[in-house]
Every structure is written in C-alpha cells, then in structure tokens.
Image (tube, rainbow, N blue to C red; front, side, top):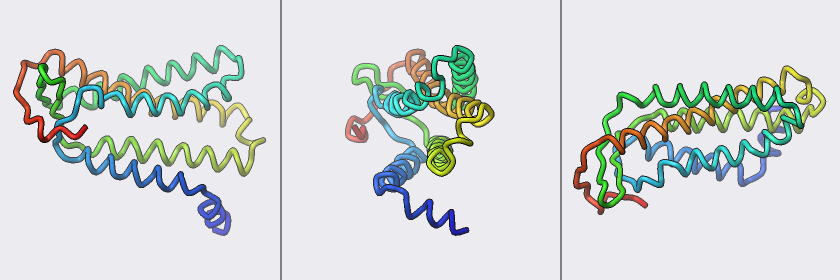
Length: 177
C-alpha cells in the first residue's frame, strides 16, 4: 500500500490537471452538443501525438513491433467505428457543425487511456528493467494501439456520418468552440 501512496505523491501536478480536464471533457460529452466538425479530430490527434513518443521508444527499429502497433491501431479503429455507427447525428454543412448525441463512451475511453498511461509510466519509473521485457513492451504496444485506434475510429465514423447526413440548420449559439 505504501508504494501506491508514494506513486500518487510523486505524480506531477500537471498529470492531475490533465485528469481533471479529461473528466471535464468526458462529462461534457455525456450530453448532446453541437460542435465544429474540426473538434472531432482534436482528441485523436492529441492522443496519437502522445503515443508517438512511446511508439518511437518501444519500437526501437524493430519492424515487428511497429507492425504489431499498426495492427492494434487497426483493430481499435474497427472497434471505435462499430461503437458509434448506430448513433444519430445531425449536420449543419453550411456552418461546419455537427450535433453529437450524449454518450459516456468518451469518458470511458479517456479514463482507460489515463489509467493505462499512468500505470505504464509508473511501472517504467519504478522498474525500467521489467518494462523493457518483451511481454511488457508487447502489452503496451497492443493496449495503446487499440485505445488510440478506438478514438480515431469513433471520429472517422462520425465524420463519415456527417458527410452522408442531409443538411440541418443547427443553432450556432449552442456551438461550443
């Protein structure tokens, strides 16, 4: 139990600020809202940028590891796409706005990503030798690839739905962004 307290005490302040922001975004996503279309891609781009650092470090010029991450990412994209394919959206094509239904899946995705990154970061700091073992490297590549892909797939499906939806006038005043 002492190591848990030590890990929490040793966590930089900005990690807690990031967690608070992720919770805010997750709660906001639980309610139907109108957002600019470009906002669909912010979260996937940020997560992939964060994952890129880990990917470069973990792949270490091994093609098999890179391929494993790409396959995991593809699986995550499929999962993300399937998770939102039945959601109804509305599109305001003249203003580039999309009305997204409220869902808790964004919160789930964000909390999973936070927990996984926190766990792997803690383990890497506490036991770098253990985290360099092939099993841990594979686990990190697969889990982070699937989670990043999940967000990409969700956004991709929402964009596809936007393109195929008829135009609707959406209240610009409710657009947050």
